[in-house]
Amino acid sequence: MRAALTPHYWLLTTNMLKSFFYYFIFPGFLFAASVGLIAGWVDRKVTARLQWRKGPPWHQNFTDIVKLIGKEVIVPANGRWVFLLAPFIGLLAASLVAALVGVSIIHPQQSFVGDLIVVLYLLTIPAISMIIAASSCGNPLASVGASREIKLVLGYELPFIISIVAMAIKSSGAIQLGSILNIQAAYGSNIASWSGFFAFIVVIFCIQAKLGFVPFDASEAEQEIVGGVLIDYSGVLLALFKLTKAVLLYTLPLFMIILFMGKDLSLLFLALKYTGILVIIILIKNTNPRLRIDQAMRFFWGPVTLLAIAALILASIGL
Amino acid sequence: MNLTSKALTKSIGVFHAACSPCNNCDIEILDALTPKHDLERFGITLVGSARHADVLLVTGVPNYKTAERLKKLYLQTAKPCLVVAVGGCACGRIMFRDSYNSPCAVDEIVPVDLYIPGCPPKPEALIAGVVKLLAKLRGK
Image (tube, rainbow over all chains, first blue to last red; front, side, top):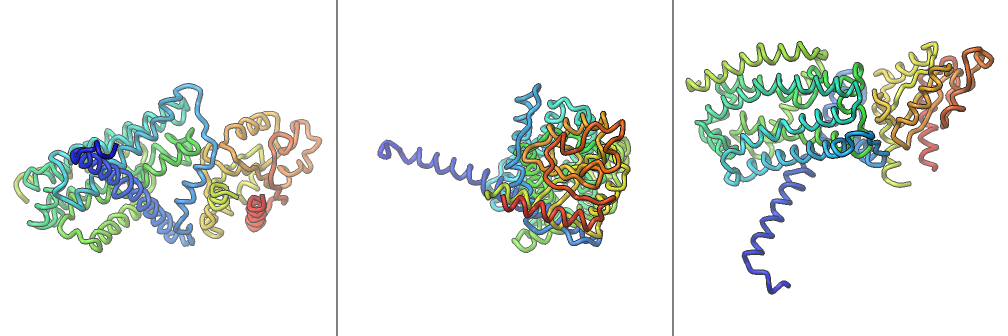
């Protein structure tokens, strides 16, 4: 059998293995989930310290995942397949973004034209999988959560896309993550310009909503609709949703670094920038109350969209 | 003892099942979860949905309506799920034993793993009880 394999096949298999490695291990699922779970612990620890508590140990989020794997999975009688598939769809999409973003940081030349648009599409899929999951289980509280999640997606996607278009214009029309990085390496980070600064503020609010953190966690509101979209999930399926959250907590700040702070991406600076964005997110989370869904919509379609449009105009006149 | 049950002892989602209590035990449970005692450092968190629960904290004497609902609630949880009876009422119905609206005790409806007596038990007693529960889990 081995003799039958021509060099062409070997190349194909090694390329496939490489893609699998990128997707599942580094910088895809495994690495992204591990970093994301540790970032989730940083979130819990900082929250605890802000409340004068001690906080959980560093492995707490890993322990939670392992515990959930050992628990029973309860599946509702109707909507069985959708209920089972939805968490996988979300996690697969989030891991793919992690792999795309990670590869374009390590090898900016290997990214393809238009991957910015692919990333934008893939980043909405975890939210859509949550909506599908919540609607499939037939729980009234979950359907309230799903309707809020839909409204939230409609709310934050508009300013998010406008400010990313502004950054694409700022990087002389590039829609490729690698070339956005190269342009920033040559002409300085986008955040140092006025348009970049405004767009950065807009995207910070949008990823807060994408991560489902306070003040934009109306769809999960533990105290009000007891977990909302995730109310009927248990065991491994709940663990998959937690992993999706962890992967997004790794990916979204990294995506922001590519868009806004692509100047110096040595390992130390990358870690510092990631931690900086994480701290901003955690501080917003800990100093704000939950917004009602109509307040969140008004916030995103009002001041945030105006700020994004301002960034777009400033970018198109070259500021 | 395998990995997942070891993880269970380090990460406990607590669901608060109030079966017509007088609210004193519930206040003490909330006190135990406040920053002063900080149960999150042992991985103990309050969860909103019964599906996410690892421990049901039952307070009060079940009446005809809540007895039915407590049974349903226990069936809805993902197993393994432990039940803790908090307070004298949940442990043994104390002075409500012969009351007209009290059909049965908590442990006649669901299997109780731990009894924490007291009227109401202090947060320290709750934490001592949880430590004994964890010792029982590790011993299994």
